[in-house]
Image (cartoon, rainbow, N blue to C red; front, side, top):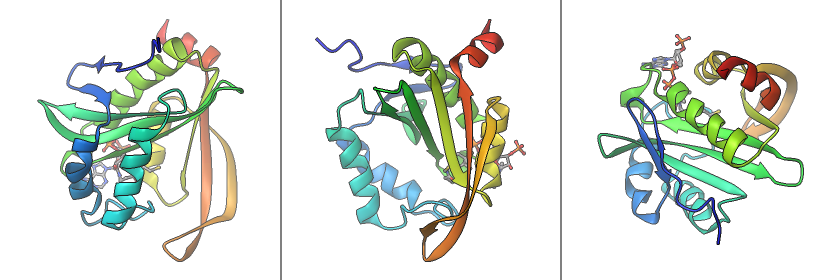
Length: 179
Ligand SMILES: CC(C)(COP(=O)(O)OP(=O)(O)OC[C@H]1O[C@@H](n2cnc3c(N)ncnc32)[C@H](O)[C@@H]1OP(=O)(O)O)[C@@H](O)C(=O)NCCC(=O)NCCS
């Protein structure tokens, strides 16, 4: 039996549950909104489809992708790409533009940190983003993640060569802030 199947994370405003194929159309809808994909590679219906399908068919212990729901409406997603051998994971998140600036992603990430460090027994969670993606870095700072690296001209996204920043948090530091 896989004890990590179908986790449900509840926060003050949100419920996070594993992504399903039926979420595809709503994820496509908000992912293709203006501005949303400025720093992401999901800028076509097909690429969003691949992202959702991969999450649905992946082993939960490798790719744990939650949708974020508010009053039963799917408004975003947050997930962990897990390296089980190293007990580390990369966290990724995104939210429908309509809900930006309300602290929704920090609230969801807080729950996923707890899930990752306690249930998945991770030792470290990291995140990466375009150096120009200030909203994403603001989330990382609010979560007390520390910048570890700036990789110059590291990726090509939407035909532009981009600088990437890495932030991370260790379980031992996370424990200090929740206790
Ligand atoms: C990055 C993102 C996930 C932040 O989620 P959120 O729930 O809005 O996070 P917060 O409420 O903490 O706001 C974070 C920052 O967004 C910016 N922001 C807030 N409202 C905004 C708005 N209406 N328009 C543009 N940016 C806004 C602010 O810089 C804010 O930082 P501050 O609180 O220090 O002022 C969200 O903007 C998003 O989904 N962006 C598109 C996808 C993406 O870039 N994902 C991350 C890939 S690494």
